[in-house]
Every structure is written in C-alpha cells, then in structure tokens.
Amino acid sequence: MLALIPSTDTDTFVTLAEVAAPVPAPGEILIDVEAFSLNRPDFLYLSMPGFNWRVGIDYVGTVAVASKDGIGPALGDRVLVHSPGGGGGAQKVVAPAASAMQIPSEVDSVVAAALPLAGLVAWRMIQQAKVGKGTRVLVTGATGGVGHFAVEMAIAAGADVVALARPQDDYTGLERFGAIVVHDLASVEGAFDVILESIGGKILTEALLKIKKSGLVLWFGAASGQPATIDFFSPFPDHSSFKLHHFVYGEVEGADDGQDIAQLLDLVSAGKLHPAVTTVQDWRNTDAILSLIRDGRLTGKAVMTVSTGG
Image 1 (cartoon, helix red, strand yellow):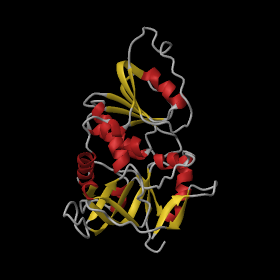
Image 2 (cartoon, helix red, strand yellow; image 1 turned 60 degrees about the vertical axis):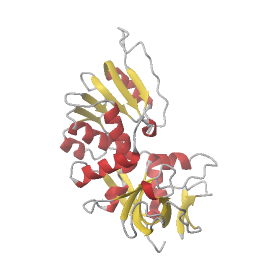
Image 3 (cartoon, helix red, strand yellow; image 1 turned 135 degrees about the vertical axis):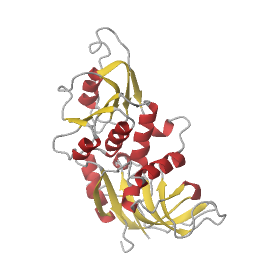
Image 4 (cartoon, one colour; image 1 turned 180 degrees about the vertical axis):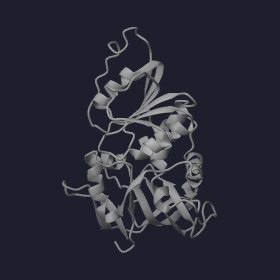
C-alpha cells in the first residue's frame, strides 16, 4: 500500500512510498482511509531533524476489518479517528477500536476529518476559561483552524468577541458569527476578560496590553515563529495581576477525547458548529500544503483526500 513518509530530500517534507500494509492486533480495526487533515504540528514535527513523523493526526475512513473481540465499530462503518501520534496519511491504517468514532450520516467525511484536533483545542480553551454570557474575548489568528472554532464557540456561549485577522484573509465567516474583526490591536479599545493567543512574537506582547485585571491569557501557539518580549511591569503601572497560561489540549485534567469529539460531531450534525474547510486536495499535493503552513499562508483547515490508486 501507499503511505506518506518523511522525505529524504531537504526541499520537500513528505513523499509517497510503498510500505507494508498494517495488520490489526486484538482490540484494533483496519481502516481504509478516505481523507485526513493537516495540522500545524505535522509541519513542526517534520521540521525536527531525525523525527520520523507521519502526517495525519485526524482521519476518516471505512472499517475494512472489525475488531475480532467485537469492540468498536462494525465492518463498513464510516469512522473518525483522532491519533495524536499521526499516521493517517496512508491508504490503510490500524487504530484502537475504542478510539474510532462513528460519523453521523449528516456529517460529510471531509468536514469530519477537519474537526478533532482544532475542535478539541478550541472546545477545551472555552471551557477552561469559563467563557459565558458577557465575557469579553479576544481571539488572535482567528482565521486559523482553531481560531475559527474558538470564535464560533465563544459567541455561542454568549461572549462578546473581537477577532484579529489579517486583511488579506477571508474573515467573512467570523463576521457572520457575530465577531468584531480587527486587523491590528492598536485600534482596539477597552480590555478583555479572556485572550486566546496563537501568534506569539509581537502579537502576544501587544495582546498582554489588552488584558483586564485578573484576566486570563491562554497562549496555545506561536505561528509567527518569533519570540515574545513580555514586560510584566510597564503594561501594568498599578501592578495589577493577570494569568498567562501555556495551554496544551492534551493536559486538561479530566478531559476525554472520545466524549469531547462525540460532542463536537453532534454540534456539527445539528448545524451549530461549522469547521472552516478552505482547502480540499488530493493527498499527492500534501507537500505543497505543508509549505503553505510553514509560510503562514494557509487559513482554515486543509483536508487531503486519499486515492486508492496512488
């Protein structure tokens, strides 16, 4: 079978190669992969020297071999898998039967593939920050996969949301949700109860000037690739306090991936959550999309469709 593996060519990230087909162990299923999404960690891990990363943290497919012990989905079921260890960028994948979520018939496979990682990050940040009615929230990188989800979820919770987006990006969806879209933080008046920050560099530095006393900043990314300079005194001449937390979605106490993904699928099925799938391409174009992620030129989510013929 074919799978995407790290490239030995320094000018590319991945290449399609013939590899041995996986064989499911007890408690596992074999999935014929239909589509997988690309996430920023795919680019980051592939950029690490000697790190043998296979893309595909989130993928969708059909059960080709069900679990022999009767656990999980049945033969022919359409399923969604969230695999923090990657590997979904292949024609066939084995997965723990208990981790494969059946996809409601109302949810398209491409949409489902875009959901887990970005959706989990946004969902858990909104919960951890206790965003609710009247909470004033700033979301940076708002046209990204996580940012788009975070804006919609915060508004659904009753928050007043300001979304920071680049002027060249398509931010009309954010406005339809009810967000106020801005292109720089200098023009934003007032302070925020919660800031969800994913850019790093000078944006993080500027965002901290906008936090209320005792406010919460959840920093979950550094898309700019630049370090931030934080002066804990100049922005706060009265020495008022705030909380700055490096947010990691997999370290939220008590969180359950299966339960949370099921909740996200239900919201999508009910038309209450809308993944921003902006790019759908054949998986042979994966390297080009990873280059867009590297250069910060991809908005929304990119989903790659897997062709059985290569």
